[in-house]
Amino acid sequence: MAQIRGLMYPLQVDSKGHLILSNDLAVVEENIISVLETRPFERVMRADYGFNPDIFSTIEPNAINARIWEAVTTQVPAVEALEVKGALESADNGLWAVRLIYSVNGVPAPPLDLTLNM
Image (cartoon, rainbow, N blue to C red; front, top):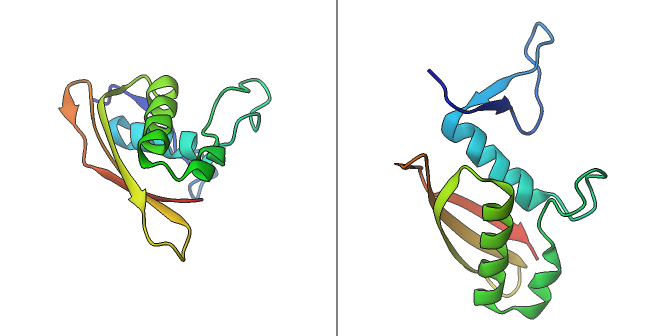
């Protein structure tokens, strides 16, 4: 039985027109992606929701990873024991490769590997 449920992100509908739901670890992973893809003030009623990409102007790995950690732990309360490992992929492509290692309700989740545009 699923303990955590939510709408799939990005929002999708099935062939009958019903909204598709996600359960447990999938919901948490989708919530993390939602936080990192949303910029502050994009959500009118939640101006502090999201991740501000202006931190990439510092090119300081510890500061960037700390900001990612803060955004995820603040906005996704189900995430526990979050560890963020990120680095510049290469100087010419402008992508930040990040691996998030975390658990949900004491259960380790598979690592989440993302690339963020700088």
